[in-house]
Image (cartoon, rainbow, N blue to C red; front, side, top):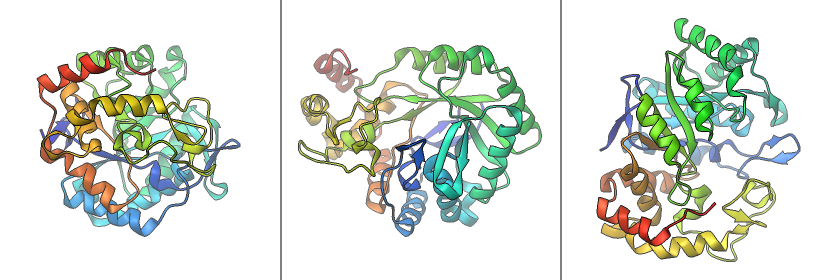
Length: 328
């Protein structure tokens, strides 16, 4: 259970990855705050190194995160251990490193190549294991140039495989036509099921890389009613798509649903976060959750979920019975 295949590549990775959005620090998308607030880079580096010590071999980041800062921190933390881990990063937007800002999409051939070169430089590596298209709503009938460019990057040795970060199965299916497409990254957690995307990943031999496995921290149980985030944290920024936190506070509907399944998720001594990850592993053999982290303690808690493994079929049935319709 501790290992899973990265789609059809033959690459083995830990069944748990770690996501690098939270360690990117403050940055803006246009005029909106997209970061998680201030970060401690030294703590981030120690957390990454501790995760590797505990068997985590898959790390997900993006050029967007911190406008390049997350990639730099990941590269610095891994150093000489680079060859023992698998790195995924993302492209598709214009990143202004010096301004800590991300502009609109840039998906033509030259922009993709520039993004790849910049990510290689920030990560301090000669190759990217998995290069993910970050523009989730790009038209499915306009992916040919993107796929052609990615295939060229594979042939040149700059990347080993690629995929798309999108929540639309039709778009995902269009991308799987690429010879070296290996993964689809999409939203998935105990309250946001996506059976159609999972079926697609299983059918096409793709890894299902799970964004939001802990609902941006809500499924850890650490944020009760009344908890509040300020405007420098995306959870307090009132962005239109935010489901987990409203007006800078935890969504009370989600907290109530979490309370209903708390005892199942914390079975066998698991924490709530570890139980939420166990649900994902039990849900499909292709899932690969990438919870975020800020501290060594969080990286340790996530990594040690591997020791417990997936929930049982009976536990999964009971959760389905209790929750019924997923929260939308």
